[in-house]
Length: 114
Length: 117
Image (cartoon, each protein chain N blue to C red):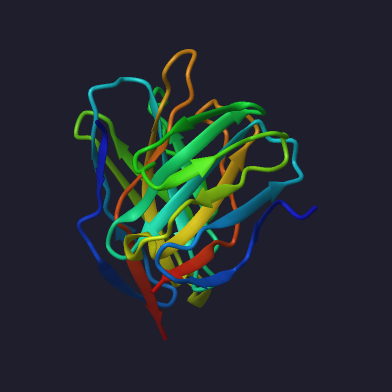
């Protein structure tokens, strides 16, 4: 059982480039989310999804797009990368939207924007 | 908006000793959940323990226990018999329980725990 898989693990981009961070889970989880982790700031929610076809904004959504065409996949798109988006990105999933459900995290993607 | 504060950026404990990590939060809600996550150098976020706000009894998981003080909005983590493998960043997190909608996790800024011989 792979759990939550994020690809790539590391990426370097130039300012203005676009890219997609991939997230896939094989646990048939309904709820998926993306966080960014910056030094001294903890994790902050970017976008989340409560099921296929349903997404919503989190705390810091600007500069990012998401879609959820299947239950398994929840990609995060950077349309025009900026140095302020240099961060470690985590994808997480849980069985349902209920807050007592533990969230399972991927191993993270370290993204550097030059 | 809810906020979570971890006032100890770093803590150190000797192996086999006990250490307590502090967490306070601010909310106007009465129904919510609190979590402690561990992030070792491997970067993966691992759930350590969780507490439902409606439960008065403090949660325990083996060597990990919490001191949940709802009125004081305090949620500290106690690690007993500390082991070298406990060395990690520890994050306190809050999640509300709104009816009919999803809720987000709000994280504190973390406490880095060192375990010494």
